[in-house]
Image (cartoon, rainbow, N blue to C red; front, side, top):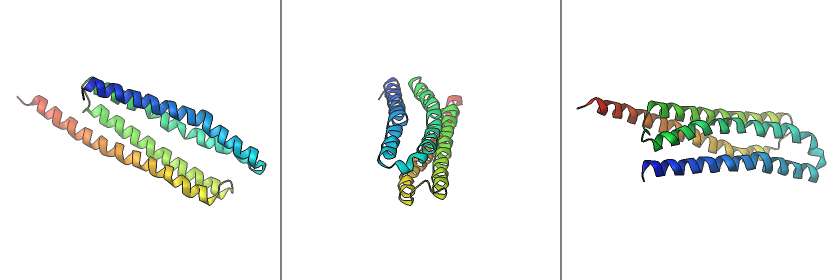
Length: 159
């Protein structure tokens, strides 16, 4: 696959994920919460704290879109293996693990405040696992891109 084609597909995927995230954060989460409150009014005091908590998990996710977009642009410019891309991947991995820690800790806090069910805490571990997977993949790719950038830099100086 050519660099330009790969870059276009990466940007399409990044934009698609961002759009799906907007749909989830702006439509699905509030409507599911409202449905729960309508079905069980005793949980109405939980709606706003949970909505704020879950909305704050979007901040690192959308902060990671910018470096991901820049990586896609540099792939299109045939500069995939650079120290800048390694740093961007490191930033994405740190955002992923930070969001995962925040999500897990928030679920624990809500459990201790008696605003969460232990079964939901266990179910949230799937989301935590996904965040850890993104962290590991981005951290590994960061290391590999940094090594490839160093090798490319050495070969550029070789006659």
